[in-house]
Amino acid sequence: MNVCIVGTGYVGLVTAACFAEMGSNISCVDVNEDVVEGLKDGHVHIYEPGLETLVKRNYAEGRLDFTTSLAEGLKDARVVFITVGTPSDDQGNCDLSYVDAVAREVGQLMDSPKIVVDKSTVPVGTADRVRGIIREELDKRGVDIDFDVVSNPEFLKEGDAVNDFMKPNRVVVGTESEESAEILKELYAPFARSREKLIVMGVRSAEMTKYAANCMLATKISFINEVANICERVGANVSEVRMGIGSDVRIGYHFIYPGVGYGGSCFPKDVKALIGTAREYGYDARLIKAVDTVNDDQKVVLAQKILDYYEPQGGVAGKTLGLWGLAFKANTDDMREAPALELIRVLTSKGMKVKAYDPIAWERAAEILQGNDLVEIAKDEYEALEGTDCMAVVTDWNQFRNPDFERIKELLKAPILFDGRNLYGPKQMGEAGFAYFSIGRLPVKP
Image 1 (cartoon, one colour):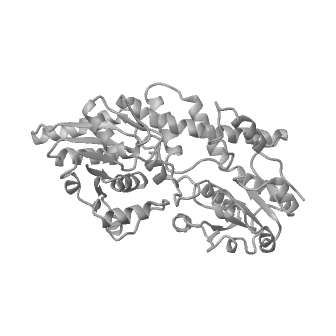
Image 2 (cartoon, helix red, strand yellow):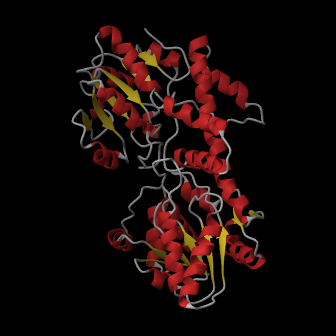
């Protein structure tokens, strides 16, 4: 099948590479000429495990191509995916300007029947909006070309997006057209060999499903963080509580890891967008607003622990923190809404220096933090600790899970560790001679 994909971000490029891997002919369109030329040369501009290999192979074998021309991309395509960004505006609402621009250009250029697929995360009603824009442009041209607008939300985790696409647990398609549903079913058939995974529903229901899913997951994260904060105050251990509640199949173990809050391109934006949608329709989404508030507060919990520890010693001014992890989660270079940025902002505003290391996101972080003279980016995790007063972990990269604690003690001025991901056990850290502070568990002071 010939497919055009507009946008080469996390969603667009993963979608393009995976469809091409299964034999479809994909034309990937992006307005950024440097990105397009880089992709042709095998340079993938985002980090996602397994993606670069797929892009290089399918480009070399002719199933995947890149262009800045939407007219070229649309030429032979039966299906057109819109995968451009939908960032939050100043009020937290979803900015649809990029989606609108693509829809308008599709209407201006299409010369054969198309199925236009909203794969970007968009508010309820966007498919109707896109349909109206395309129809308006066709009317201006005085032509009548058959088209449908379908919602096909993505459910990809950054850091595991290729695997999620290749082995989806469901494919949601929102359309009232049986023909469109059948064509999408054919396109996704290689990813559903073991069982039927396509769930067809109304367009608005599909749009709502994406937001509801992400808000549910965000709710679980904020809930366990709220519980963790209570655990610390009452003397309970959130790790034990997590095991106790997770064993209930109605709750499960997924997304109930306490930490420093969620970040990235999806949860913060989508939570705010659903709050905005509810407000637009006259409903106060109190629970989802609370999820957002709890998460904002959680991002400063670790920073507050550091401030509290040093307050009796005259504060953090002039001291240096060795920081492990900058990306919002492991296996990605995404710095959007990363909790590490909030931790750095709070501590450097009090005069604390930060030496930080991240195995993948360090370049993006360096660009973001280049105006902060109190921040230094280290070349490896142990260099980040040399001569520092204490250390903190905020991203759960695998290489941080079982480090050389004796070496760490030699590098730090004092063995003080703040663990924002609960990677280590309190008993283990106490026996190793560390003052240890984690999330939802009592501190250890040897």
